[in-house]
Length: 242
Image (cartoon, rainbow, N blue to C red; front, side, top):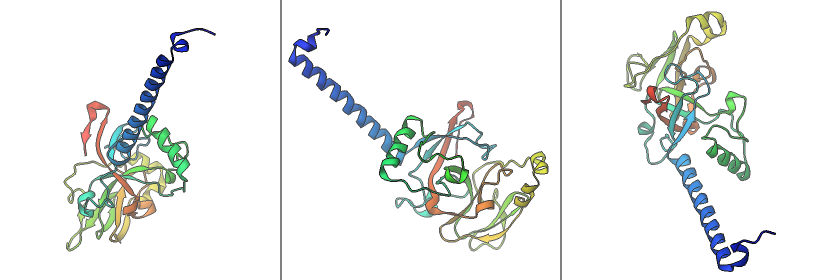
């Protein structure tokens, strides 16, 4: 056995152990603070699909604030989510997890920058969190014509397009070549008029050739909105505030 000063000096061993405990405690405090920040204030998300092109491309990174959502009591429903906002949605099909598995998910998610959750990650889109654009708010009437949403707000006499009713500037993608090849997309070109309930939102992909939105699965309840997209920060030359 190798002899060191720590084998011979009890005070030195105690000092070493104390420093180790301080380091471990400091790391745990840092992890706790980071977990609180990402759970309640802001976190980064890497986009894994092209559903929000041209606004957000595949492999872009955005900041999401879980603080801004319609069910947060510090906001009124109208203040939290506005027409044209990008929202972070809970999975359409949520799986029940006990406290232990949720803890594992949060721990791994923290160290992988919210990119990998060993328990809740799924190959099925309905079981994963997604980002979509809000085009109609509670109480609105909305229909789709040629992939563009037309909305009549409460008390209004006429329908206006989604672009006329929001101060947000964005473009949509309707690739004619893709639409011609995929005959099923013609079904999502138009949508009959529906009226949204008190807690319902109508959300769409900016890439309208992607059909995983309210055209396919209907309105979104306020409880499904878990945050608001604040800005795109990567790639840095294409950064923008939403």
